[in-house]
Amino acid sequence: MSFSQELELLLRACYPIIYVPTTEEERLEIAIANCAQQLSNRTVYIWDFVDGYGDHPNYTGFGKRNPLQALELMEKLPEKVSGVFILRDFQRFLEDISISRKLRNLDRRLKSQPKNIIIISPQINIPPELTEVITVVDFALPTASEINQEIKRLLTTTRQSISIELLNDLVRSAQGLSLERIRRVLSLCIASHGMIEPEDVELILAEKRQSIRQTQILDFYPATEQISDIGGLDNLKDWLLRRGGSFSEQARDYGLPHPRGLLLVGIQGTGKSLTAKAIAHHWHLPLLRLDVGRLFAGLVGESESRTRQMITLAEALAPCILWIDEIDKAFAGIDSKGDGGTTSRVFGTFINWLTEKKSPVFVVATANNIKALPPEMLRKGRFDEIFFVGLPSQKEREAIFEVHLTRLRPHNIRQYDIKRLAYETPDFSGAEIEQTLIEAMHLGFSQHRDFITEDILSAASQIIPLARTAQAEIQFLQDWANSGKARLASRDANSIQINLP
Image 1 (cartoon, rainbow, N blue to C red):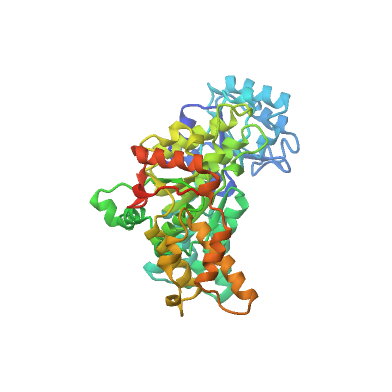
Image 2: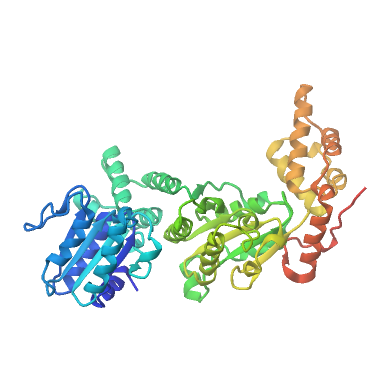
């Protein structure tokens, strides 16, 4: 059901007080006016704190700087007079006892009258005593169709024509932005060089990054890593490569559903985060990084509001990759946290979305401590697959050394004994191998020469891998994966044993 259909239904059903959280005030008011016109041409009254009611000859300025008086206008009008009363930024006054009481009184009265109150607010902030009388309606960001129409309108105004391919690229890159931001960035393009060109797609993406950054919830993460940058993990890479075209229209015509996501569980430094970046690059999809800690805020109800905002934004940017790093730390011990149930409610909202989502948002969640994850997270249906990423085998260590040395010394990689390096670094993770190479480079640089195999071996002898300092935890993860609880990311993962001195 679209917003217009839902709003029209609520107005017809005489829902007295409706709350619409959005920053797109102008676009929402146009949508409300169109909806009111369909209902026997209902009159729309718009109030704000500075100017009171405007655009109405009999009540211009009424309720100026007086929110209680703004509500009294509904009582002044005859019962049979219909109207839709839009109250801008009214959430700031809901904590006032007189406003709260007045709204509850109006809720009783307006149920039998063709009058409705619509509160417009950038975020949801409803006191407990008003939750039963206020109905919240979501107002989504512009759809691809709306963006298409807006771009065409602007092109008509500037008497410019563009190719279908460029129009589709502009629409795709603008998804997730408000209509006002889209207008602003396209006006910037026209002001820069008099017309819209293919290069302007990057300007729209820059505006999108700015928009996401301002939410302080999601980060627009540049993904330059490739699947080939991952050493080993052949089972996982094969799984990803088979799904490379799953977001295409051809996949929809074939009957394939959108891939839901992956949960990557395993030892620190084994390439879980690298995999998330490589997926985005290989599938040519934007990568959004969620720091779950940012969802939690101090005000009551704000954490839940931020979670809904994150979901709305991710779905507006779909198809995309949503990367949630170390999700186990965010939701560990949710039942024992003394936060009044906020963490449980945020987790519930998030987990329900994972199960019910229909949008092409591919979630890549990583976790180091499987014991800290709530059991609900591991239930089938949340993710397409759960992969265990363990310590690399000797063959995989060879691949990891080759990836790094190809990047660092592509001209003389043959001078390094990669097989020996892999053999001499048992139980090293990918991150520890990278750190070993950095240490070897420091050694060679300090002696004004290039680093060699012996430098790498010397550096490796100074590093104590995590497999030795956290043996019990890693062995637990290994046993958990080998018991069939997760799919193994590596083909020869079963042969991996932790070698202790």
